[in-house]
Image 1 (cartoon, one colour):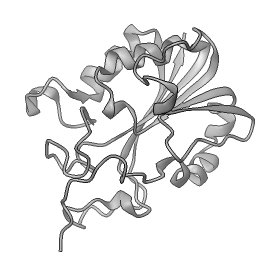
Image 2 (tube, rainbow, N blue to C red):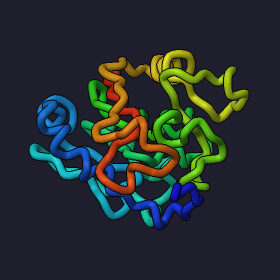
Image 3 (tube, rainbow, N blue to C red):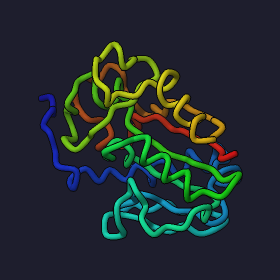
Image 4 (tube, helix red, strand yellow):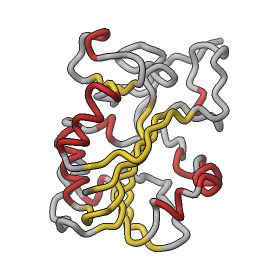
Length: 202
């Protein structure tokens, strides 16, 4: 039986950050990007753990993740966020504030679900009714005819450039994903279905 029910965001605590720890360690991300004093925006019950530095956990009780109120400009060596941006009301405003609290030369590291792998090219989301935006390397905004869809080359890269961020890496993370498995949420297990962005503040 295919599981295509919509679930509440509170049920969807998939611990994607913990699932990615070994992969990021092997890739050298903790040496290159996630070091020093950082913040994990939208961490929920799965905050980022780093090997060289500290991480401030930020979730709903701390305030609006889009506006980051009362957080000082230029404070952090890195800003990390996993599966939070798709829940924000306004993507440019959120990324602008996440960039605002970064030090010059700091790293913005964020992860979002992939529209093809996670959303299965269907909107609203099959698996999380709180998703307000979708993101894709291959499907353009013109193709889906929605202003809340973000194509990596046409929309996200120019936005990051306008914010003064230099792209270091953008990759599809599909480890463990079975492309022939059908219409169910593979992330409830160990599979990844996401896009990972790394950018440096100029």
